[in-house]
Image (cartoon, rainbow, N blue to C red; front, top):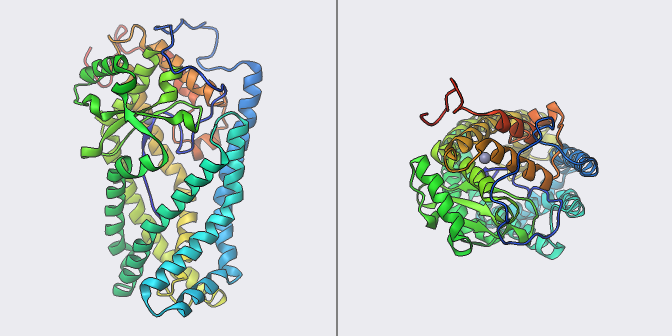
Length: 438
Ligand SMILES: [Zn+2]
C-alpha cells in the first residue's frame, strides 16, 4: 500500500541493473570522445557469448517478474481461504482491547506472513543477480536491507492502517475518497523526505564535487545550457558499487530535496561525453517537471484504484466473507482483502503506468541529446554509446519480446533508445529540436 515513487532514472526499475564485468578502476577513462560506430552494425549489439547470457538472464527476470506478481496474489488468497488471516485477527483481538495494540499486532503478523511467503522468490532473484554478475552484495548485507525495509514498512504502515479503519468507521461508503487524501499526502511527504531520510539507510551518498570536481564543471556547463539552476551541492555521487555493478543516474525529490544522483559505477565505466548525455537525460526529467507530473498521474490512478478497491472489497466480503471469517469491512482481516484487490489492480495497471513512464523517458532522451549540443562534440554517438555501455553492463537483451516490453518496461528498450539516439540529429538541415532553438 505504501507507494514510494522514488525518482526518474536512466535505466529500468528499482532493482539494480546488471553488470557483466567485475571491478573497474574508479579513475576517469582515458578516452574523452566516443569512437565512431560501424554504420553496418545495429546501434546496440552484443558479442555472441554475452548475447547468450543476456537472453538467458532476461528470460529469468521476466519469468520471475510475472511469477512474483502472481504469487503475491495467490498467497493472499491462500492466507484468506485457509483461515490464516482470521487467525491473525483473533490473536490480535484476544490480546488486548486497545485498538492500537490490535492494529500493531495484526499488521505485524500480516507483514511477517507475506514477507516470509515472498522471501524464497526474493532470495532467488538476488541469487540470479549475483550469479549473472549484476550484484556484488553479500547475503548479510542483503538481509540487513530486507530487515530495514520490513521495519520501515511496519513503522509507516501501522499509522496508515489505524487511519484507514478510522475513516472506514466514520464513512462506510465514502472512505475510498476520504482515505485517498491522507494517502496522497503521505506519497507527497515520502517523495520529499525519501532522498534525505530513507535513501541514506540503504546507500552512501557524497557530494559529486568531492570525488570529481572536473565532472561537476562539465555538468554545470550542461545545466547552464538547460537554463536552470542546479548548484553543485545538489549533485550527489551514490556508492552503488558496494552492492551492484550496473550504471545508473536519477533525479529525485522536489522543492528543497530535489537533487541529481549519479552512481559511482557510472563515473567509473562511462566517458565524460557519455556521462554528459546521461546527466542531460536526468536534467530533462528535472526541467520538464516529470516528478510532479508523475505524482499527479499516480494520484488520479490511486483514486480510481481506491474506488475499485472499495467496490472489490465489498463484493468479495459479500461472497466470501463467511468462508474467510471476515464479517465486515470493519474487521482487521479486511486489510488482507484490500491488499488482495489492490495487488490485482496494480498488476493490471502496470502497463498503463509503464506506458506513461516510457513516454517521459523518451522525452528525457530527446532532451538529453539536445542539451549537450555544443558541449559534446558528437551528441548522437555519445548517446548511442551510452546505451551500448548501459546495455552491455546490464546484460540487456537486444531483442526483447514486444508484449513483455509493453507490460513490464518502465523505459523504452535499450535497442530502441540506441537506434533513436544514433539517428536523431535535429540540428541538421530542415529539422527542428524539440526543446531548444536552433
Ligand atoms: Zn529517465
